[in-house]
Length: 326
Image 1 (cartoon, rainbow, N blue to C red):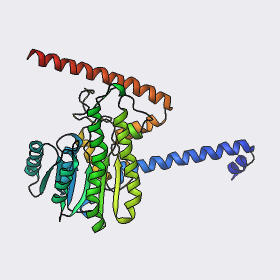
Image 2: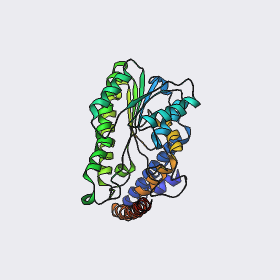
Image 3: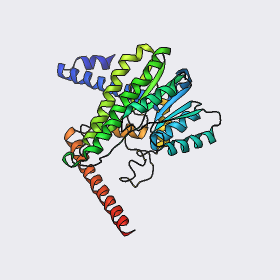
Image 4: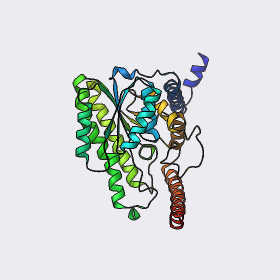
């Protein structure tokens, strides 16, 4: 009681600072408690409540392949969507070898080209199936680490088709079946390049396409939440995959998980927040970056991506020399 009286007897500016400090501590405490619950205590949802089938785009390598294996481990039948028939068949055989009871269908769909045929194949494949989960994972990062005026126009047009058009078109194709049964989950894989940092120089088009994914996902979250459909944008930072192998030589770590570790965490987040960063190492980096002013983040990203550009240039030169001497 005496402490309260002592505080109340202080000047008004002191009381204002005290209240602001108390609010800040309370907010930080709630943030920490929510984070601990999210990463360590929150139970994963039963994906079968959405349906018995899951669609995964880009399932032949990296995060998409890990998603496919993890979904199969959770007992979900799979529809694998990609452009390479041989690679799709190989993934199908590998998953079937581990999970004999899982049914798997494949859909040949070049997401960077004319979508009409691929979308028709997808609609025919899912017709009559209890599809519950859609993972829009497929993505391209080319042209990578390039000043925009030097970028290959054909390459970034293909990237826009994969990262932007295909996400919208496939979602549009799958939504009617989810609406019909009033349940489902859609997960769109975004990127920290469009959410965590204020800019991503030398990857401008890539970051812009992922910015579309984030806004698209959040808008659909509001549109369809009342209709039983959970839409989520997942935000990975760097993951040790083929896409990053040309830049990072480090093995997996807390801050650079492999695709399997990422997918395990990602599956547990499906059906919760509209924007989710499933990996705890990525989340810690996000918190740190958020403490820095924009100009420092801009400067760090430009310096880092110029280094990426140099690494990738030397890598191409070695390949050209090797090809010319073989």
